[in-house]
Amino acid sequence: MTSLDLRSSANRRDTLTRLRLDRVVPRLMEDAGIDCWVLVSREYAEDPVAQSMLPATWMSSRRRTILLFLAGKRQAITRYEVDGLFPAGWNPEVEGDQWAVLRERVAAADPATIAISTSESFAHADGLTQTEYRRLIDALGPELESRVVSGEALSVGWLQTRIPEEREVMEEAGKQAHEILRRALSPEAVKAGETTTKDLEWWLRDQVQALGCPVWFHPSASIQRRGADLRGSFASATSDVVIDHGDLVHIDFGIVWDHLCTDQQQHGYVLLPGETDAPDGLKEAMKKGNQLQDILTGSFQSGASGNEVLEAARENAVRSGLNPTIYTHPIGYHGHGAGATIGLWDQQDGVPGSGDIHLFEPSAWSIELMNRTTIPEWDNQEIGIMLEEDAWFENGKVEFLDGRQTAIWEI
Image (cartoon, rainbow, N blue to C red):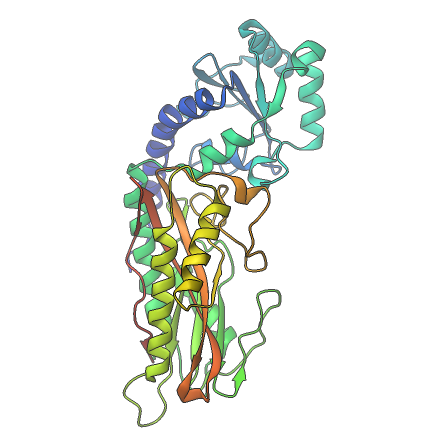
């Protein structure tokens, strides 16, 4: 496990952000037919898209930050220099009011469309607060206001699209998270009859703290046991349970490494006294979980909607004798990233809105799913194999960024 060097991380992040601003934004605006894109963000009321475009040393938007993409150029109408990523577009001492300067810049270019951060389907793309919306509309005036449109397509495209140079970072992130996860599903972290699921969750938090990077959600640990399902449900938190011999342990875990997220779920089995291997039924259950992963990733098609991929994968899985639940999502700046939603655990017939978004290339994905199956050694008790691994989608092919679990870890 290698700790994160924050200065190197910041330099790499800014390099990648600059490349993304140069390459991704102009293409998105051309494809969407948008002439002007305005992002307004205020300190502690951050627009998620604007925040992802700022330098690594900017922990917030610094008063009011206005990022403007117009006439093939970008600029920041803000009180402070944006450290080389956005040219300065305002001199407060000379030009006066910030909103007046914005209107002057936009009116001079006379754009046909002005995109802003509003969206019903994605919180990531709905970052313009009510107050800033009113002030923006007032500043633009009636004529320019009539040209205002939702910037959802731009925001989603920016957040979901990755550039090839980011793949190395995401591979590093996946490797770091996998190393911690492997240790968590071992005797180092689990002592049968002593360690509780909450103990295991906080053990994971301590390891990430030592690594020098944050988690983006509190980890969850749960168990399935012969004669009792102590895992809880998707909709409710699990209770604190002592992990014992014969338990199937499940962990859901994600970190933020160099500003990009991981999201992984794996299983470990606590051997009974005298056992040297997990029961064959659990091994077979894992194989079926991997089979469902292959079916889903084989259903990815650039330009297909999330709902179309979900339908194709589920039909194929059911024909193959599986009992699938698919709830896969983009990953990147956010763990649950903006973009094409491929099912939710409680919406297996499609997800209106976010499920209608098309898949982008290249993009990164959390391949998240569950297959239910019965275990002969557990009196044919039904269990769920819940797997989640990070993957890269490019050239019509999905590849796991740091491999995937294909065998249940033995504890």
